Length: 133
Image (cartoon, rainbow, N blue to C red; front, side, top):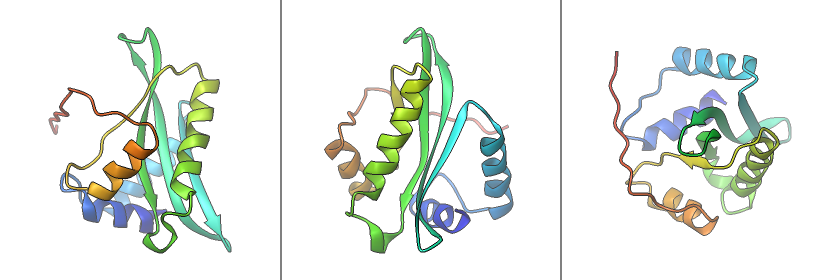
């Protein structure tokens, strides 16, 4: 999974690869009942992954799911793996009572944005802001 995150962070301008931090984050997600870490495997090797975390939305009056870390090895893309990962994550979220899924994608990741649009995701009028502490 760390190799896939390295690949993902190489195309996201706002993040950088730090395997120690990413490993720490994955462990926390795996230990948390409000988070899911899904992987796709082939021949005992992880070839794709996605993660999601439940957050409470006042707009929805309940849980929404923040989807992160959607990545598939380049040689395995366009084979339905990403869609299967997201569909499985959505099913998990629906079982938790989620009424909305949300994600952030790098503006310059045209292929990724096209993938999401093709799979029913819609752009919003919201902008992401962050503040490091």
